[in-house]
Length: 76
Image 1 (spheres, helix red, strand yellow):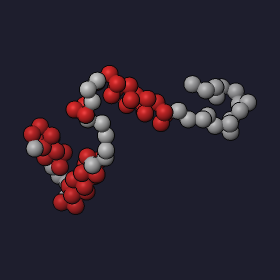
Image 2 (cartoon, helix red, strand yellow):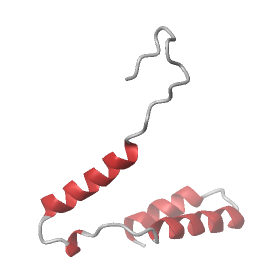
Image 3 (cartoon, one colour):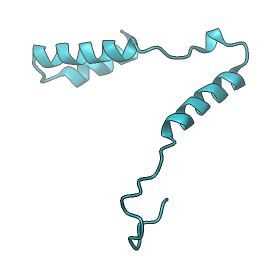
Image 4 (cartoon, helix red, strand yellow):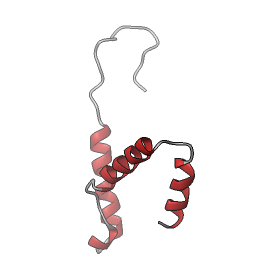
């Protein structure tokens, strides 16, 4: 539907029905992933802070110790 529908039709040109159905299933699966909606928040700054904190927490990783002592492989 709308602009997305137009772009999707263009992206599907030259693809088989099986490929198109696979794309539709993948997009449906992604759309069903729970997330945050701004209508559920009375303070947008707090919503953004929560999202940023969640993303940051997921990105924090313990660096591997496998390459300790190797020259030129400092943590970035």
